[in-house]
Length: 367
Ligand SMILES: *[C@@H]1O[C@H](CO)[C@@H](O)[C@H](O)[C@H]1NC(C)=O
Ligand SMILES: *[C@@H]1O[C@H](CO)[C@@H](O)[C@H](O)[C@H]1NC(C)=O
Ligand SMILES: *[C@@H]1O[C@H](CO)[C@@H](O)[C@H](O)[C@H]1NC(C)=O
Image (cartoon, rainbow, N blue to C red):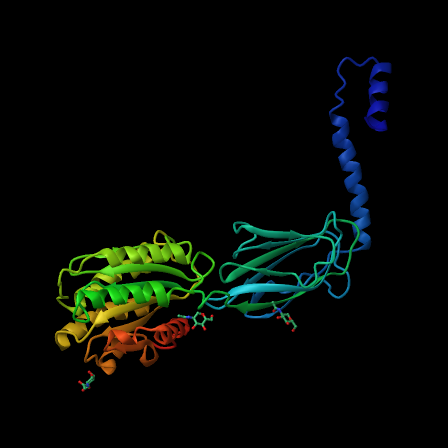
């Protein structure tokens, strides 16, 4: 019990007041303390917040840096990386009042709704690196009314930590007797499972992969967030391997893209299917060539144009003994995004590396 309260209670007793409310006293005390602090704050005014918007790479600092920050500071920082990248921030210096002056770092665009990555205070945090899991990071610096220190200086970069790169990818495999035999169909599946994705960092903070197997009348589609690891992904794709293609042939290229488009139509099924905001999207499509005729090619192109117009890159892997790569280009994101496979022996590690590097490119123009 504080002295003020004791004194008032004594007064109550002495004056024999019947109703004397001691709860009013702590309220009054809080008011007194506040008055004192405002006086204190007048000596050290608020720091001026630096810019709040940052992109790519650069530097963020506390208010007034390299001078001390102020009293009662509250500054927000919004950092944005290009599509497919994450923000990494590294502290060069960090010194704040350990009890009371905080830098909050959020894994996302908003200090209000994004998850808190870390709350920093004190010193000796230099060289520590923090990363966001998407293209956005935000920060909030707050100081109390006493003890100002130098604060912080940090550099930040937009970086790609995933192998082969941070993307949301649908890999669509052809369930038809594309390369002539059922054994070749299985080699396509084995290539994707054991070679193409084998050393990718699969999961919510790396490359997300939604495998799809399309047959004549239906497509089996997994969401992008179903596979949490490369082992999960391989289990799903190996499940495709067990399916029999029963000598089915594809009616038309139009049907193939119609089936696959339903899975990559982001505006229709974005959040549910696990597409992440701000991450570059890719469709890797294994498809037997040639089209039936020019009308079939044009009908298929209606679907691929729609996919590309939604910002999804199309990497096309054409399968057939006499595949014509030039003919494939209009259905893809460009000449650097098409591959012809005329023999299954081409499905090797070097070819996997070529596909991986294509899907990591940002398509600059649509076809
Ligand atoms: C910060 O700058 C140092 C020195 O230039 C550099 O080595 C480091 O990679 C940078 N870190 C970030 C996250 O930008
Ligand atoms: C390949 O396709 C292109 C474009 O459709 C065509 O002009 C060319 O003649 C084709 N080449 C062969 C060898 O069929
Ligand atoms: C796996 O990753 C290493 C290095 O990251 C690379 O050199 C190799 O080609 C990759 N293997 C495949 C099959 O992509």
